[in-house]
Length: 68
Image (tube, rainbow, N blue to C red; front, side):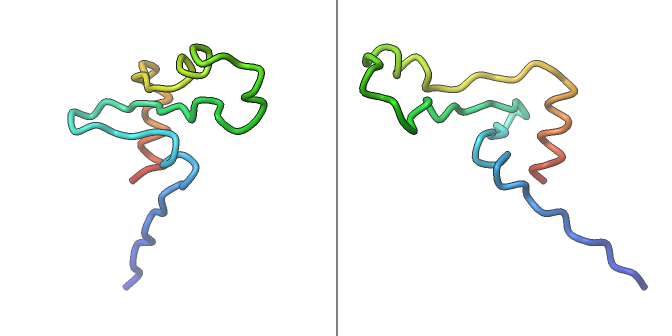
């Protein structure tokens, strides 16, 4: 009898997106916090941080498939 292969979590997707208990997929930004921060003011860096909910149903399906 053949066993079904386990689906692996796509780690890059898991780092960027989270699924809430109610099923909403949220995108969490890294805040563009990697380099060239010296010439950006505090407000500009703060605005880049945070999360927002995804609304495109096609994108949500793809992301959920990558994060079992």
